Length: 83
Image (cartoon, rainbow, N blue to C red; front, top):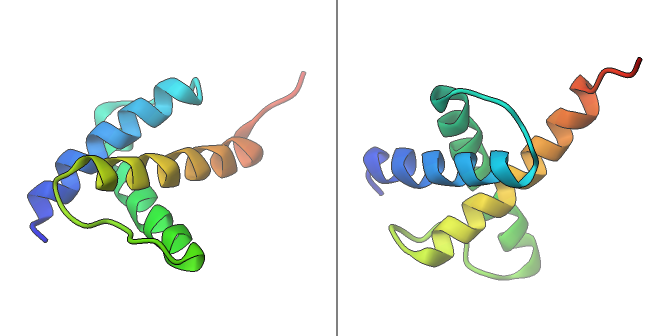
């Protein structure tokens, strides 16, 4: 798996995950969240017995998006400020 594919899929998944979760961040944060999200999504898929990140395809994007949303939700629990 090429690192370029991880960056492209990760960046897209992080960006879309940020939109879904109403999270603010720059392009670098989106890429990092997406790449880590792909790892988390792959781990979640392996637990339920499905394939994880398989390459440059829609399934890999959805796995990375799932992981990105989970990561952003966890990050949101620790960074939310209440007035």
